[in-house]
Image (tube, rainbow, N blue to C red):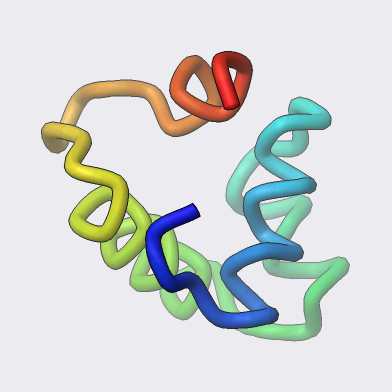
Length: 61
């Protein structure tokens, strides 16, 4: 994948499993706002638009 950190990889796994932002934040031990920042960076790293689904992208990986 596109040079993602360990935390971002873990977040990707949770996204792929269908967890929402709040659930992932709680499981990873960060704030919901921190989780939103990670999702934003992931969108940029994988070249997805603001409203394109990371989960749909990961389904094809």
